[in-house]
Image (tube, rainbow, N blue to C red):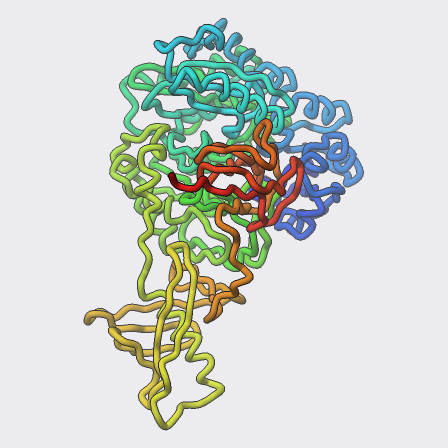
Length: 623
């Protein structure tokens, strides 16, 4: 029996595993980097061991340090979570060689699926349907579009859709460079890209006695940069017979590699066609929707299988529907740029929320930008979608910019509600889903709340005061509002101020009474779901940048610079010049105009803060 588990991971998944361990009276051990010294997973574990350093390479990817930490802390088992070393066969062997229990599949099974090219060969031999790889040197116009994929790793890194034959060489090179940086393996391959395909997967659990259970299906088609955003179980609107074929292929895949534990077999589904994509030899991020529909605890099943238990009888029957949305600290309207800073408040009441953060925690630059997974369950799909969208819309999220509005709009989009979505959903709809819909009265409410707080200390004047002005910035631009202190209280043109307190303003607008909840954290003000930054009344001229300045849109690391780029280089508008890596994602900085690079301050490996000057492009003079 397992008595103490070290989770070789961090954040949300570490907290998730700890929760089940506590319910089973199993002692928990965390590992943490210097950046995670005060992180939630570090705080809630029964014991924690420091991994010196901040980056994943220095810490969570150091298998020998993690095994040593488990032995030092007296753990008798290791759970890998997902990401980092969760699909590293050498790490699994090191855990076993140290006399510890590995809460995962056999190293040989991990190894068999580690390379997507090798996995496809095994699945083809087992009769599992798949898309045959293409020879990159033999791709023709008739083969387009194609998908370039990294042979190792996952999470959308090293993937490129190619629609023009002239782009293939460049995308192969770029995908290989990204894969090498992310996984230490630059091997890539090419396969046909299926337009309007759906990403459907099967959760499997297998014991060490030959039994394999398939837990229904999940649809994960809503993706950004080939990373999942919204997932649900069961997969809706599958053609007749497709679910049975998916289950059959998934169990065949598991048996082929003598699998044990929890895993997921992923497929691309287009109409009646089913194509094997890959097998994730670990617990998936989206496992909660399966837990909700089947009424199981997949982490508890992992622990049970690791202890040698049998899966007796048949798997439980599914009931109802569950939908999960990944809440990210990122700005979808700015090329999904990750955001950092203090998470002052996170509350999504009424539904399941899996998170690695609490109020006051800091979101840093070294790790994934996911704040939480919001999961809603209901008897029907329509009810589950409505419940999740409503909970997110009413959520209190004070801190960095998030994708909350995108999630709500996606859940309510007609293509999603009618189950007609596919993996290109955001390619088609991102612009509409991120169109600004500002609340024009939020800045006024912020100003009135602030004025109320100040008036408490100054008292009312006998005569009406001069108009007061406040300036704010939001995702929708800058705002200037005006109000007055009078004998009757605060007034503003065009609205009736019914009441104004530091935390609540009530306005009557065109005969309708509206409430505005107001919270302030230093220079940030949150009015309902609108985030505002207090601006000085008069801008600082010294803060202005030269035209053509390329500023870092986020804190991160300069991953690479375009080949041959140097001061004096001629550039075309839209040319990729610099790549930044932040929160496990790579972001391309492009030339804002056609002209000459007059300054280049970025160097590979350099750590930069948001707003740092990376380069300057002087625009060509018009003819």
